[in-house]
Structures are given as structure tokens and as C-alpha cells.
Image (cartoon, rainbow, N blue to C red; front, side, top):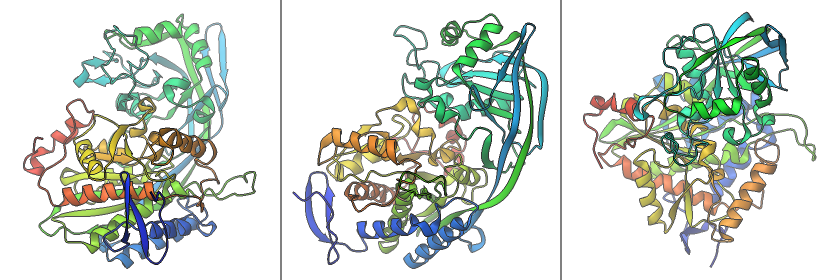
Length: 561
């Protein structure tokens, strides 16, 4: 059995399931040679790591537009434009003075050592004395799960202190909360982004999330990286103002803070898992912050292509990836400074372009397809967020979003990894498309890490659009050559050595047969939904179902499966 693609004389071995056969690479097939060629360009030193707001962005955007034009895709932006402007803001806290104070003294906090704080407000100074602190447990308000941590507490002008992850993350069997939030699978309520947003909705001055390695999914060095600096979407006039201060509190510092107020962290963790928990002010302790803020503004761009639908063009499917990477940084052991993001996410970007090429060359679809290449994913999903708050195509009639972000390069697989099990009916479509390839679906192996909330599709999900993400690091694939062990080893090697580092470069050792399988899965699903009348739905327990249901009238009706 041949298990690798052969690049010669326009021929390829297309791997589907466990059987192979030579077929000519045509307009109707995802072409691994084209994927490789595009990645080599995007990940080259000439593109300088594709950082937003740099000359590398200009080269990247021009290249992506050229590719769309060569394919025959139309501009997908407003007024016939190829791009959507994304106003961005970089903030940096200059030598902040931070402390918890109480009658007996104070606990000095050191940026990057026992606290990590930043701001996404365009303020030149942050100065506050004697700020009350409120322990809010996990800080969840989830009516669909009959859970509210806040009660009648007023957070106006205060600092909210949160536990990380969900209320049932560490629950013991038999506890009332066990299973209410998906057990080990993180929900949106477990993400720090939700906690910051909820604090803002309630008028808080700031929010601190107590770091715990297992519950966060990464150690303190990751949480504290880039302390004081934040890149964000320049604030839209709508919605609540963001909190003035946000970040992580080291578990040791949190233990000391709570002891100052006469509490024990372990005891409060247990109490916060009870349905009758209610937030309370930490008596006798306060917070102090003094810092100047450097604010820099710049514009970046999303790149958008459009394949108009032949019968129902107002119903839109989206296929997306992020074009940005990490720019240039300190030299690695080999002297490389360009963090080119060949896999993360030049390969996903190339995959979107290949899907666009194949669909454009085929029979017209009844629904439209938008191909979105986002900026600033690595800065916090900023480009996709900019689209979600100012959509070019109404989100109510956006059928679904399909996102490619890191595809494994170790060869053909017997399975496809599902990120965010139990979220939407798109999982049924995925299972059918995988079965057509002779493959099966495997749920991600570490759902507690919340990968579902850490890629660009999430910006569309929180706006109600059903989404599906393919991400190669979500679980070790069952590789045709080497099985699950080989799939896990690929993840260990990539994440341990190359993720967000200069090592993430194109390599002649790549085997793109597995990547082609996954790209082809999305191509099949888009083609199927592109000629269908059904609308994918969120599952009843999904955090995003209520948002989607509120716009059902715009779709005429929501089909039931």
C-alpha cells in the first residue's frame, strides 16, 4: 500500500481510509503540490513571519488576493473590495505598581512573577487605590444550567477574583455539580475570556483569574508570557466598555490574598462547586494599581473571497483560516528569527484557497461561499472578532463556518479529530463525510483545555453561527502508518519543539496526505450544505443555542434533524 503522496507528472496518490489508487490531479481534487507551493511562499523569510501591521502583512495580503484572482473567485469585501479593515490597538503597562493591602500590611505583586495584568482600554494611565475585591467563584451565569454565581453582588468599581475553568472540572462523583458543565470538557463559561466579559457587563474595574496549571491547561510561564502587553480590536462604540485591568493571579499569591481575608483557597474551591454558592466581598483587603500605559494604534486586514450562490445567494457558508503568524523574534539554536507559522496557519490558509479553487471549478452551488482569511488570530482572534461585530454578510443567514487551524503533517489517518463534541449538528455531517472516506470520528483527547474556544471559529460561534474546527493538535490521529502512537508522537514533537517558534517551517519531511484528507472533508461538507435547504443547529445544551434561536425568523424556519 502506498501511504504517501507522490509528486510526479501531475499524478497523486489520494488516500481515503485504508485504500489508495492513482488518479490524475485535476481541478476537482485537492492538490498537495499546490498546498506545498503556497506554504513555501507564505512561510518564506521574505514574508517576515506575517505579523499584522508590518511589511510582512502587505506581502501576505497581496499574495492572497493574487491567488483568489487566479482561481477566479470574486472579491468578498464591501463595495467590491478584497479586504476588510481591522482597527487594532496595542497596549503596554509601564512598570506597574501593584499590591493587595490590609490593616496589617500589604502583599507586593510583581508583574510576571505572581501576577500578570494588562488592559485593552485606550487609557494613558490606570490609577486606583483601595479597590474592593470580590470572590465570585467560577463567575458563571448560566440559566440553561440553573447556575448563578453572582446573586445580588454589585461589582461596580471592584476587582472580581475568579477560579479558572468550570464549576464541575474538579467535582467528585456524587457532587451536585458533577456533569452539569460537561465534566472534564470545558464550556465557554470556563474560559478566561468569558469571565472578563461578564465582569465588564457587571461594571467591574478589573478581573483576576487564579491560575492553576491543570485547570488552565498550561503552566504559569505561559500565563505570564508577554506580561503587560495586549493586542486587541480597537473598541467598537457598541457594547459595554472592557474592564480596565485583566489577567492572572498566581496560585500562591491567591492563597495569601484569601488568607488575609480569613479564607482558605481549597475550602473556597469546594464551596464554589455548590449550587447555592454566591459571590461575596473579601473583607479587610483591597487592591492598589498605578501604571502608565503606552497605546499604539494600527490597521490590519482580513482578506475575503466570494463564490456567489446560483439559487439562494443570501444564504452564506464560510470557510476560513488565519493568515497571520508571530513575526520575528529572538534567534533560536539555529539562528532563525522568523516565526513563519508554516503549519500554524499557512497550511490552513492554503487549504482554504484549495477548497475555493475546487469549488469554483465545479458545478455552481445554490448557496454562496465566503472564503475568509483572518488577521491577528495569534493576538486573540482579533480579525474574526472584527468580522463578527461588523459582519459583511448577515450572521443570521450564515449557514455555518468551517475553520482550518493547524493540520497534521504526518500522513494519512484512519480517523478525523472532532473538537468540541456535543456542540452542533455539524458533527453529524462530519461523521457522514468521514465515513465516505472510510474514516471515523474521534473526539479530542483533552477537552478540558478548551481548544473549541481558542480558534477563529469561536468568534462566529458566540454570535450564534454553527461552526466546525479541524485542528491537528486536538488529539493524536490514528495514522495509517504507526497508529495512534505515531499520531500522539507527532503532536508531542510539534507542540514541544515548533509551536509558535521558528521551527514551525516547511519541511521536505512533511507528508500532506492527512492534511488533504481533512481539507477534502470540508470541501465535501461545504458542497453538500451548499446545495441543501437545511440549517445546521446547535445542540440543546450548547451555550450558543439561545443566540441562534433568537434569529430563527431571519432564516424562515429552522429545520429539525
